[in-house]
Length: 461
Image (cartoon, rainbow, N blue to C red; front, side, top):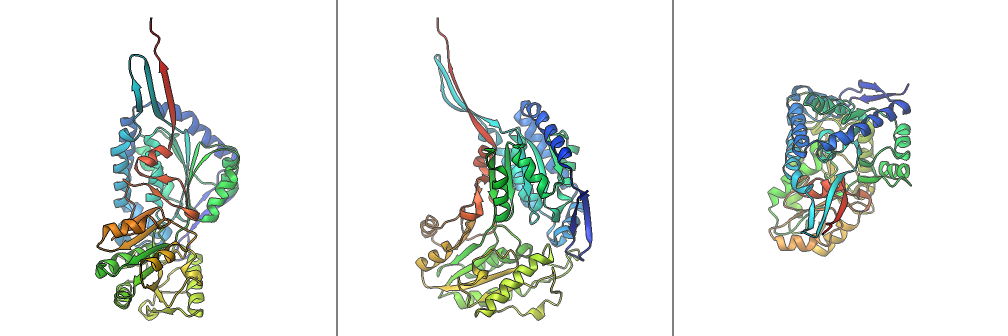
């Protein structure tokens, strides 16, 4: 029997473990979801919406358990109170638009014809969720999928092994039928076998680029719909008319919050030469104020990375960049908790360029590179010099300029004067190796349903 383990970044201990389902047991779970789907979809939309919201409310009641569990599983300090703000905001918003998003598109309703397009649930939706924001990323698909009439099978990352259990516990206790929303523990082989067998009607995967490729290979020939949110190397561009203090505060938070383990975290920053020196100086001071330590300590503002192997990648990228001429500006003596393992001090690098992996490959840690630029054209070329495209953060007082630049940036979302945020009213999507598809917004509902056309000719006497 294969055991799936969560190794805590706090102390390296086995925090939780669960047996992986056999292929036969996994098939039974999917069969149960498929049998339950038709009846679930026949329930009134408002009833489904309210049951999902009750599940969300029930999870909020479990915060005393959920927040320290997150610290133990992936290292986020309890100081930040879990993920409830975004979790609730996204759930409430998709609930508010569900009726409109799923309403039929009526083309004609006359004495001769009824012509319309309705939205119909795919069936069984498989959600493969990541560890970095385990509740918020999962709810992006779970909430609208259930509201739209799908059943959901959830597989969570081993690093956040208990999150799926907590979500299903909350929703089932709130009244969602057990077969309608299920959590499963699967190894990679069983996951691939289920996908290859066409077990699901839609799959949403959030994770690495290689993980996304594995999903596509497994689904090849099944015609199963895939939503993929993969890697990122999101840029910020600070223009000469930017609010400097606001830019420093938001971009440094976007680069280091959650130990930099954010899909849309800021990983590279381009600053107009007129503001460059001041921006760098203020950024180093900002980052130096973190307290690195045990995430269970209420005073800790920066916890360990989720696993020591993730921190190893960041250290290797930094060392490679420094060997090629970069300078590290944050004094490591300010962070005595850095143990060479999962506990990693934040860092800012200058004298960087795009020959360095640190400025091209996903870092996914509390480290960011800052480059000086002369103008918009130089910044645009650098922002687009990436295999990824999730978000770009532009800092200027000129919305027209931001819009003009935004149309030239190869990205899924363009921010002006903010960063590292999912607006549930807008589609969350990416380009290039960041993936395809989109969640949240009306478009998210459309991706979780299929169109069905009705062309009804009325017989006349």
